[in-house]
Length: 88
Image (tube, rainbow, N blue to C red; front, side, top):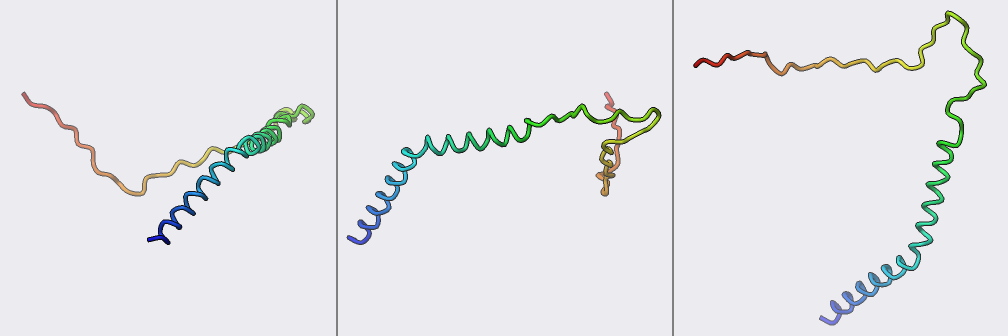
């Protein structure tokens, strides 16, 4: 019985210690995460996505930037459509 109480006490002390340390270091963790997110945002949107120094395309030339995805055909049939009429 005493061993069980010691185990419970140790678990409780570890839980409270982790909770206290988390409260203590939470501002530093949040600051680190915000800096990291800011750098990633800068990297994503900092560069000009539409550069203006590209030469204009030749007149009459056609270019395809992105092909639309092919639509998949249904491989299994659900059933046949039946139109019912209501009779009074």
